[in-house]
Structure formats: structure tokens, C-alpha cells
Length: 111
Image (tube, rainbow, N blue to C red; front, side, top):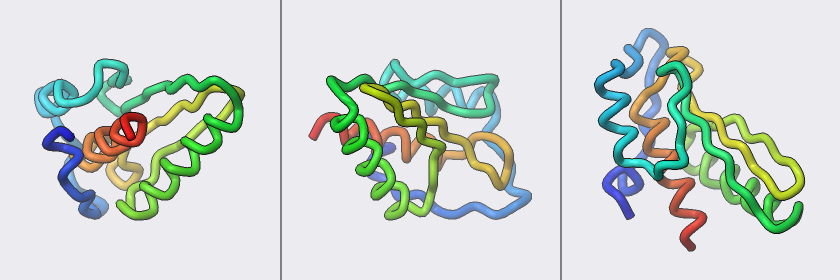
């Protein structure tokens, strides 16, 4: 478990400042190398599975985790693949919560 995955997502309010590029770079170092930072606006990661059922099961686990954390990613499910996109819609950018949830999603794959 890394430091980020031990934290809890805390709701932010409209008008909160998105992370700076330097902050994003630092938080990104704490994630699995498969997470990509897109335009310093969002995080993306693709997960591969043996079949649709495994991908669906993972999607459901991510959904349950998102509900528990109160922070909801965009999830794209296809045969043997799940794409997760994270950003904080209220601030139209990245927040620490996005990195926390990314770290927690990675923990699901290690269970």
C-alpha cells in the first residue's frame, strides 16, 4: 500500500484550485507507471483482462470503491479491457483526490 492509497478522498468545492504542474508531477511519481497524465488535466490508465467477465468484475469493484470514496471516475468497459479516466469535474482539473483514487484502484489489482 502506498501513502496515497491510505488516504480518503475529501470533497472539494467549486472554485478550489486544481493542482499545479509541479504538484501533478510529484503525485504522479507515487502511482503505478501505467497511469498517464493527459495535458495536466486528467489521469488515464488501461487495464487488460483475459475476458469480458474479468473486465466487468473489475469495473464493478472500481464502481464500489468510487461510491465509498465519493469520487467517481469515467470508466470504459470493453472485451478484456477497462479504461479509467480521472479528473475532478468541479474544478476541471486534477486534485489530490484523483491520485488517491488512482492508487486505491491499483490496490484492487493486487488483491
